Length: 187
Image (cartoon, rainbow, N blue to C red; front, side, top):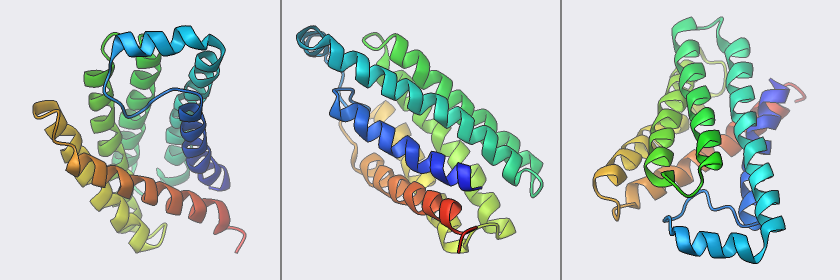
């Protein structure tokens, strides 16, 4: 569980670091502007690309670790989150490889998979009490809002209020869950 907690926090840190070097996880795709940024500083782009690949591989590793840690409680939910979070990570890796082609729709689809996977393990957390219930409920609410928000942006790309609010709740959930998984065995 400690390693899972570390990975939750590590994923957030690598995402923030990759944005510092120019990779934009959440952005409107403007291929010409992106190509110009890459052309202006290719080294910075390579660093951001490596960081984001590390993040996505970590997402897959986290899904597998959570499967082993929590599958004894409910194998069906464990399989659901492992499949959906692994698919999310693989899609994100694919997006990274084809960064200027179909980022927006693929990214939104990956975020819907992310929401379903997060919902599955949040339900397990609440149902089986393996983490404090408040953390599990935060995950349930956050993943539902983020998932619906992602779906709405497919239909109405300029309506991002629900998606943004859900994203903030997901970030809070992952920080709290990561901290709890990392530090609860020590306390």
